[in-house]
Structure formats: C-alpha cells, structure tokens
Image 1: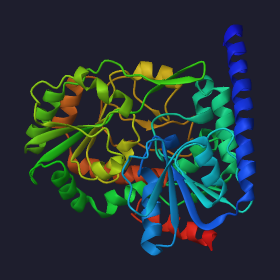
Image 2 (image 1 turned 180 degrees about the vertical axis):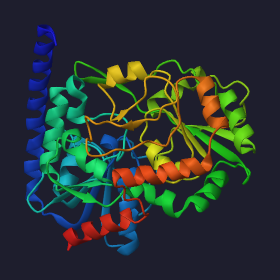
Image 3 (image 1 turned 45 degrees about the horizontal axis):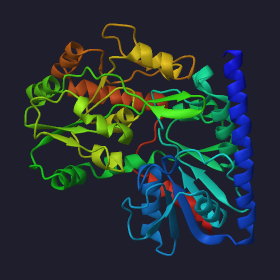
Image 4 (image 1 turned 180 degrees about the horizontal axis):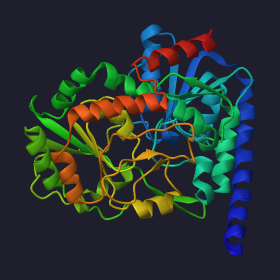
Length: 421
C-alpha cells in the first residue's frame, strides 16, 4: 500500500472510530431501560435483508413453540413483508440502539455496526450467512481485508456468545474468517432445513406462486454477490456475462427433458441491469426473482442451479439438486478476492478439491462440474451422471463433517430458549 493510501486509510479509520464512539453513547443511554426477557431483536445482511436466511427459520421455530416472544426485526426497508408476529423496525441508529439495548437475545447473520455495545445479561447468537463457501473472508483474504473491516469484525466477535456452524470445515475456517476465537455450536444451517424437509411442498408452492404449470422445470442462475471497495466505500460490480442462456436451457431440456423456465437471482443493486443479459429466445420463460427476500425458499423448489462462487451451490447440492459452476472470470475473481477456500484446477476436467493451506486435515472433492465457457457447460450438462453426483455429494458431506439433517432450527431454538429461561 502506498504512503498516500495509508494516510487516507488512517484518516478514514480515525473518522470511523470517532463516529463509533458517538454512536456508542446512545447504547449507554438506553441502559436506563430494563432488558425485556421475552424480546428478541434480529437483523440480516446489515438491514438490507428481510425475513430471510438462518435467522428467519430460527424465529419461525421459536414462534411455533411460544407465541409470547416479542420479535423485532431491524430492516432498512420496513415495507418488506414479515409475518404478523414480527415487528419490522426501520434500521436507524436510534431504533437500533434502543431495541438492541432492551432485548434479551440478538440474532444476526452478518456484522453489527461499529459502535454497537452489548449489556451484561444479553445474549448474541451469530448464524453467519454462508456456512460453506467458495469465497475467502476475514483474515483469509490477506491484503484484501482492510484494517477497518478487521476492527468491525473484531468488535462484533467480542460481543458474540456463540457462532453456529454446520461442519468441521466451518470450525477450522471461522476463527480467521470471522476473527472469532469463541465457542461454536455445530447445529447445521437453519436455512437448509426447508430443503431437507419440504422439497416436494416447495416445488409445488413455487410453481403456484409464479403461475407455472406443475410439470414445469426450473433452472436458477444465481451469481455470487460481488463487491469492490475504494477508500472505505463499498460498491457492487459485475463483469459482462458470457453465459449463453438459451443454449444452456436447450441443453437442460435435452438431458433432463421437459419445458424449462429460467429464474434469475441477481444482487438487488444489479436487477436494473437485467437488459444486459443475453436472453433472446427465452421471452416469456424468464422470471426475475432477485427481489425475493429468502433465496432458500425458492431454491428448494428449483430443479437445477447454475452459479459461479456462491455458497448456494453447497445448499442446493446437499439437497441433491444438480449444481453446475460457470466461472468465466476465475483468474480475475481470485485476484480481486484474494483467493478461494477451495483449489480450482487451472484447466481441464479435474475436480475442485479442498485447499490444504486452509484445511490441512480435510481432504474433500467437490461434486459440482466446473465450466469456464459455454462449450464446457454444455458438455457438463449433457454428460451429467445423477448416480455419480449423489455418491460424490454424500462423500463430500462425510469428508467435511457436515451436519445437515433438517433439525438445525430446532437445535438453535432449544439453545435460545435455554438462555431466555
């Protein structure tokens, strides 16, 4: 890092520290109010998420057991849809400080803002949002992990009582990834319960929701969230997409038969860029599901997933949904991200394997066919072997010590209720 860049970063960090100190004063002020023993405050994706991800399914299980719990959900857009037993509250500093300060339990899948303070007697359960991932995070990113990001992560981790994970792989990756050296709860991913327990139901529900015939088959294209940062400012970027969607859909029909619809799951900030995607020939068979809050609810009802580096691949794969990886920019992505948690082959049909530098004690082979261009994707689809895929998925789960039995929400709810008592 150049000297001028270092000075700019130091100036930015000082500014953020001053702001965090000012905001922390509100938390101390709201300590005059008692902690409500049945109040649970939840947030997802720094407020950008709605009723979704792991916290959603834990809350649903808690509500099923006891309707006396008071659920407050901090959200940037309170117009998002929530069940009537959840109170959505705009995620402002005053609202956040008041509700967090007066709640017995916090549940989050991301980081709390710098300056957040927890009181004695409160409990913070961190579920994280990508249990098994391709993308490096935290200190694994090396120079790509800024000093400011480290401070935010450390502040959040110091308040965290427990982190939920779903595998031995997670236990080994999270200490550096989350800058967290506390205790872990191997409960499984609550968001995956719907794919373990309700795949058949969700298949019908999704087709009814989007007015599709019951026999319709669905492929979801869900590229990973991509981010660039300059001088502490965050932005979203996307490269020109080279995926031939029509060719992909035709190949899926050749291999698996049936009429196929394409679901596009883009980052909300990229949904306006939809016209840039080459969708000729798929008019009337393309549906944008980018604005749906809970991806797993939709993922549980699709037949195939196409992605690049999204952890959704793991969620879908363990539900025995065929997953095809399309990574036309892998070299640039690795450079921008600072590495990946798994070792991708430089070329050829070799599989993706565990990264010895990350998890030296785990030897795993990922079951997802990898393509860098449309020809390779076509070959992977047409030559897809369902029995081999199922066998490899099972072996992969065993190699990483995965717990994925559809009971993660119940385990998490049991744990939260013990704290509430």
